[in-house]
Image (cartoon, rainbow, N blue to C red; front, side, top):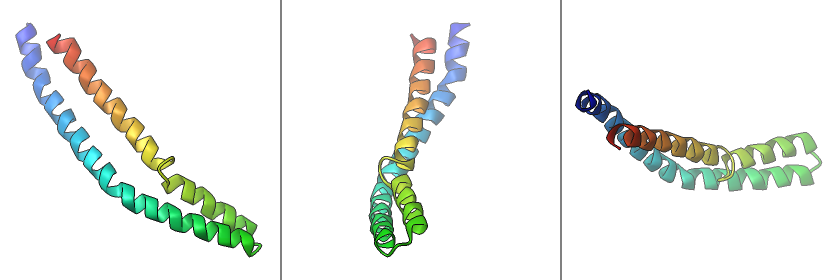
Length: 96
């Protein structure tokens, strides 16, 4: 029974491993683009605040925060960590 479970779970572990590798690669490649976009949006947000367009400045600063390393990319890294934890949990339960 245990051998059948190991055989059935092996493809799931392989798929999760490949998925985590691909997502980690995409996350690393997009870090430069998001950092650049966050910088540009932050500069435009500050310029909008200086020119007395407070609403637009706040919107741009919020967008800059979301694309900065502390916004959406951090949420993606957290989610990727949880998927990897799931893989390790399955692997520990089945393979001991």
